[in-house]
Length: 391
Image 1 (cartoon, one colour):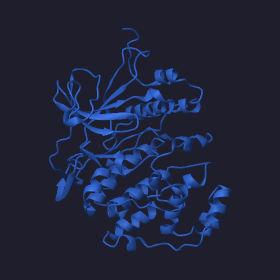
Image 2 (image 1 turned 135 degrees about the horizontal axis):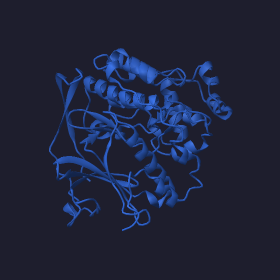
Image 3 (image 1 turned 120 degrees about the vertical axis):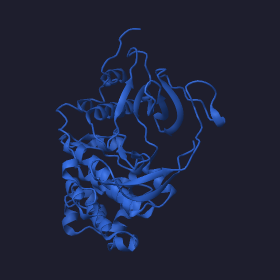
């Protein structure tokens, strides 16, 4: 599949309605293969069938993952360009759980920097449907593609990290951990607007349950995973998302991942190579005795100054990076304090950084009983506002 190859250019002081400076994202023309609802595939690509209302005209495939495909489309009555996410979650109960989490949370949040669901193509009945179609805002590209195609200016880094933290403030105020923040989950449009997507691994921050199931699903995106997740299985906090934002900022500054670990041990090694051996206070903050013994077995390492790693970067950017990537989660900067950091001063506006109400008790109850629920039971928990029970 052809990817968008965006080209970034900074235009000074473009003001939006909230008087925040904006940058401009320009994209080169590209013609990805059209895989429509009808007819043969273009360019030798395989055909992908989208069983959606004829109100939508399918355009191009713009993304594909383990259990879903995303196409751009036009809503013919309004002319609006949209993205349609086709999910086939019922082959595995874990996929169904992720779909359930994402649908519930995207319907819960209403935030400029969190992708929204415009519509859901509802099945005619529960027994026969095997696919879920989410109609969402169309975003031209994602941060992963942008970083891979060109260098980002300091202005872009500021604005993108600000928007990411602005979204995270809403999530954390609702007691929701995203748990899978990474460049490919930060969607961008031609105005440099950023929206966080993919809430399939999200979880309540207020949960007091045993977190052994956390790592069962948390198998991807090792490069953005906080060290405490690998060093203890007993608890985790909102600081895990803050760490991921730090990894993303570092990647924006350098154009490459900061901690591209090949496995669990290599990941920790790369982190300690940069941050150095934990202080005694941080060492005893690690809950797992086995993890402490592992850290103790490693040779002593000195911290590498971020200035040496990012010689061309803004001093304030590196100061924020230090605070985002504190080894000890208790010392890591909070989202609220990160938004107040001098690096983000051009955008910070406490009157325009909304929170969200805490998710209600029982919002993630299906996670407690997930092993006992059949796929048919999970299917019936999907939050369709109305499903016709018979043809």
